[in-house]
Image (cartoon, rainbow, N blue to C red):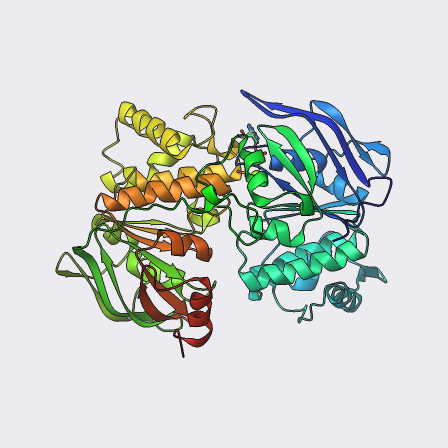
Length: 521
Ligand SMILES: Nc1ncnc2c1ncn2[C@@H]1O[C@H](COP(=O)(O)OP(=O)(O)OP(=O)(O)O)[C@@H](O)[C@H]1O
Ligand SMILES: [Mg+2]
């Protein structure tokens, strides 16, 4: 494989960038070279400094030290708009566009083309179509953005970047909410842009994606640049070791490139579920028109049930019905032998159910509250706002979970908004663990969490499960579902496509079930 680093001059060069936040040296002396026509991936554990580096170079933060050179000239962007005008555009994981405006309007917000004193609506639509065509996307640009899936919304954000003729395109974890097909679409767009000479800086925690798209990889560790490597010359195993800073014993890094050490692949000794299990919840014919075809599902104490399936296959819909977040219009739920009907999540919580939702934006972190306050929110809601949890107990709980989940924070009183994305996610997970529910629904709980922490967290959850919790685990990451689940229900087209015991399926047979409805058919 040839590596396109032939251009002698980097389009963007960072030299000795340092940034300190109160109590945290987020970046120290970081260097980075970005060349035209390359995809350069930034990797590192949660809190390593990736997002901070990007924010420095896009004008969100001023660096304390160091220099940014764009095509050899020093720049000091004071805002994202200024950076964008210089040719540095950024697309974040959470697309910051206006869902109610049309696709075309979203591309042109703030730069509407004008004609005879008014806005040139026709010209705008035409140009929007052209920009999207550059990425092989043909959609009706007059429809509201919200009508399209997240992947398309991200393409719209990228088109916006193309409009200002970006030289550098930065993507910070753009794929963490995309399904496999959508990732493929995004990658084909990125490959096209790379061919046109764009320099692309990409942040992800997915090793497969890194190896699918990168020309080079920069590894960050504890705010420092650990090193820069040609992707083709760095094995997965070495990559993980470099991120962690020590031999990453016990971390599965995938065998697909044959580069992982045998010791790493062989370490999956999860304790098996006890043979005799008590049913905690049984739902029969649970469904809701337009969301989920009636399905049966059973959750048992001490057992981890995995829900596999593509985005939109009905996994989250099933979870919401079980939690009373949506009202079922068919079926029944029986808990501990008693029939229940949940009018709201409050009823489900009272029945001992917890739900760590994938919807971080709406049900997630309260940014200005501290780690401790965020962490006890669900527990406090359960005990009732009138019966405040004593401060001592709150501190104890917070310290306990910060330690157990390896949350990187200056203290438990630090506002959660200043934590890195992955560390915020860990606090949200801890919020539900702290309620010690009898049954816990985890919907994509490790999104944005680095490769090592992901495995540690799922091992922790499995241990809790073995103590008697019933767990429903939803994840788009098949290897993870296969590794931790005692039983797997595969969802497709908003219905249950089959239920399988541990070991009955591998990745390809799950995909077969998703595609065809059952194995061997
Ligand atoms: N605004 C801020 N105020 C205080 N500390 C901050 C702020 N932003 C980031 N930090 C700290 O800087 C460090 C680096 O965070 P950063 O968000 O860059 O990590 P990251 O590599 O992007 O991690 P992740 O993979 O979890 O997204 C962390 O310790 C974080 O808590
Ligand atoms: Mg980040």
